[in-house]
Image: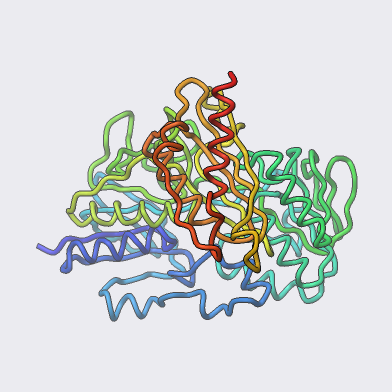
Length: 450
């Protein structure tokens, strides 16, 4: 009997689940429902597409026709799922009812927009789909001043793209630093100063109070001051889209995402729900660094989760482990990366942290093109285990943050890292002693002095 698999959502998690299910069961009937028009595209590259560095057509990796013809996966675009009944194993969409044997829910997240007046004015945007990016690019032609609400990674990447297009940009953030929660203030301040050198203005410790205008945006008010602009981008964080999970009565965790098991099955009143799997921005999973849950709303996490969900939905066996959530961003000539916990997050988990820091170069000092690199590494004060790291560099941040992520997940102490770690050396790629090792040396010296 042919197994019928339905997937709700066509983002990184949903489309990976579809492909993984197909590899696991070549004969299954697989149907994907999505409200979007486009599928299988990179949301992360939209700032560069708006700036014109990447062509829109190159962002979309595969079309619905490709999936239908090459992978025998049906994709129902622009189709909203109205209801799901897991007792009868049915999905209702566009006036029809579809049966399933296994269901994958990959509904992603929604941009949080504060409940203030004026968010419905013309000129107010979010970034959550390919079409959002195209709409922004089109609207920018008649815009001189832009306000970006939210100084997370996406907000900063978008702010720089706008600035590079010649717009006057003001970034408004309710916290006292850019990249709050994931970034240390000393590291974040470095990025802020760099972006200020590009002409971007920052308003910190000032929550947005209103968007102003008649019919279209003319200004925003934040911290009791008014800032003229013709366009507003809300990059104020992502909340799990739990509409369908709540409809089904699934347990929602304390962080607002669906609580799942390592098989990515949801719970209902503490019991596992059979034949249903949840993946992507909508779930909370377990931290590899601290005892407790975490949210990992990253494309890399969504792909890994989608793979597990798709395999299991097709009858295979796969588990999703605890995570450190490494991330990286490129802002102009700067790369900034992080993994594990920041000091703020460590405090939230009740962990006292000690940190070490070092500055060096990305290449040998005499080799042309060397740029500055700063590495900050955190460890648990009690166990000395590494729990987090951040890097700012002109190049080479990704490989180093991946190196540190592996160390953090393995549960290694600062002292063991120093004793066991080696770094490859070649003048065009690194100093003979990598700055990562120098940062861990600083950390170990602090433990010795304590």
